[in-house]
Amino acid sequence: MSLIDPHTVASIAKLARIRLTEEEETRIPRELSQVIEFIETLNKLDTHSVEPVRGGTHLENTMRSDTDTALFDAINAASLVEVSPEHQNGWIKVKSVFTP
Amino acid sequence: MNLNELTLTAAAEGLAKKEFSSRELVSACAGAIKEKDATLHAFLSLMEEEAMRRATEADARIAEGSVHSPLLGIPLAIKDNILMKDTRTTAGSRMLEHYIASYDAGVINALRAHGAVFIGKTNLDEFAMGSSTEHSAYGPTANPKDPSRVPGGSSGGSAAAVAAHLSIASLGSDTGGSIRQPAALCGVVGMKPSYGVVSRSGLIAMASSLDQIGPFAKSVDDAALLFDAIAGKDPFDATSFTLTEQANRENDLKGLRIGVPKEYFGEGIDPDVAERIHAAINKAEAAGAIIIEISLPHARFALPAYYIIVSSEISSNLARYDGIRYGFRVDNYESLLDIYERTRADAFGVETKRRIMLGTYALSAGYYDAYYLKAQRVRRLIQDDFTAAFSCVDVIAGPTTPSPAFKKGERAEDPLSMYLADIYTVAINLAGLPAISLPAGIVVREGVSLPIGLQLITARNQDRALFDYARLFERII
Image 1 (tube, chains in turn red, orange):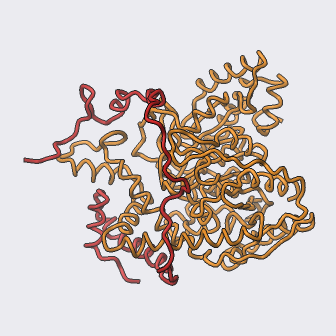
Image 2 (tube, one colour; image 1 turned 45 degrees about the horizontal axis):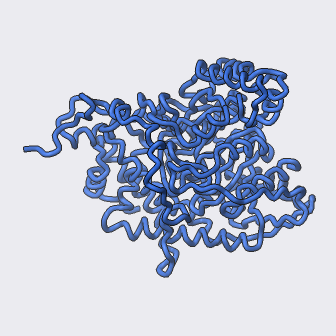
Image 3 (tube, one colour; image 1 turned 180 degrees about the vertical axis):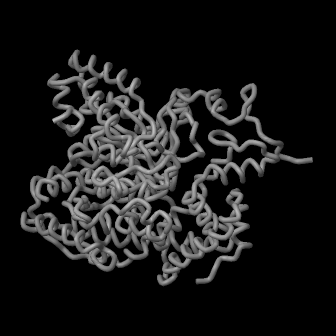
């Protein structure tokens, strides 16, 4: 079984925004490799002329008229801010996005 | 018989005839919970006061004669990945340990209108990822038939609640088998609707092209009643629609064409389970059904295709848990990146991180075509297998799971062996089909009787026909 290399795992962790522990840095390459091997059975199938499925629905262009706001009044904007971990005066508080 | 042991149908009749009250029904369930849930751990939170309030309202409506729904006054348990306004909703994760839902899910709105009573939120594998409920951040749930074994997952709590008569019926969610598999392992009825038939608004998203909410119940009739109450187009879910299909009201099995996939009885199935399922199918044949051996040639590719697709969609859907708008946020952070990386490291469990990593990998540049698109092409082939099968059969029958409930801890450390529990269920989600598991006898392990399930599958949007066929089977097996 070929191991996914630690450098790849580190890039994936970065993309996934998950800081890995040392234990995970050892375990995850092995687990990922096992699963990748398992799914490589898909390559046994010739699918070059098969259209990929896109999503779960068969519906198309589901629209609603842009008039009925009563539906959305049920959710109070202020209450959405209040569930955030840190907020002040109706705003969600975070570290600065752009560092000087 | 204690009131909590009644079926939904019998409870609704009893309430309408004023033989007992909704308050008494709720009390009976609450009593059973006090007696058994310390061992079972089916519930994450209880809402006894709120339940009594709603029960009182229901009793008032019954007294004045305005009973419009069989669900009026019936105590239900709800899987804790379904939002209920102003109620803690955790998705079985530390990430949402203190999260209070801001709105009601579409199905909750629908059930409120029917006058149903909610007694509590049930345990699940974290973010609905798992087949045993062992991946819950709040501890596992026990199988009521044998507490040393798992109830299945991810909707283990909802299945156990019904099996142990802690609620009259319950709701779960099913992305790769998470209703049907625990239903089979706990000996109750569990049904997954066709994709789009039940609203996903307010269901904490796992894999948006696969997720569906569905009922757990003590009988097929009960499950059908609960299904009718929650099915239908919801303006908050653009993928939802209302079924126009009428019930067939099939009266007997004569002439019903039952397809049995030969791929389902090969390697990996427990011989006792195979024997029970064959026995059930033979009974249908004796009653006049026509048994047709069919082939689903791409059956063995369903699990790998599923795990790529589900992990990819999970990695996308769980990106929102970043410590910013809701849920857990780490302390003492230095930067925005710090908030993201450490919040997700600390608050996500092992299986959740595994699937996010796998999904991120499958979707990343250079791998997207080889893994994600490949899996979606294989999904098309799997869908085509079912379309071909349904051109010559009315319903497909087979085992829901390859084996009865396994012991706690037996598979939790080995992801691949855990994934095998879903071998008969995932293809159905990939194809968006409706399917139901009903109890089909028992197998004995170490002197304990363990339930197993028969799975029935129909063509897409034939949910009402599925219930009809399930009723017919239920009568004879």
